[in-house]
Image (cartoon, rainbow, N blue to C red; front, side):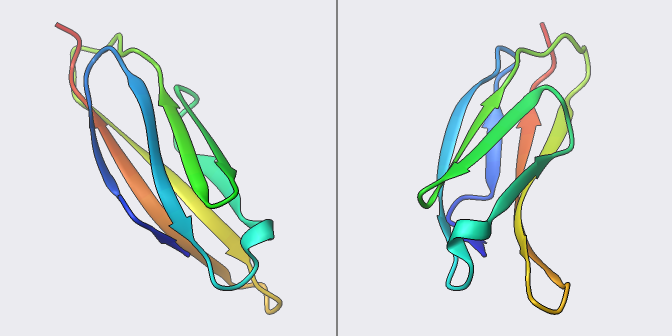
Length: 89
């Protein structure tokens, strides 16, 4: 699993982001998880689409989205994108 872009700077207003996903094995079995309920992420047909909600925090926030599959031996193969959101002004 490989994400073409892995680092995203997000304004406090949030936004929409996309990156290509390459997967040699099991491309139809990829799953996505996020470290925050304020980040919605969906994988479909070689693309990861991510929506980050507006921030209410006066601190910089960091979210991680993981794209992964579990192989036949139970090992998890993944790549991650990190979204760093600016503080609310």
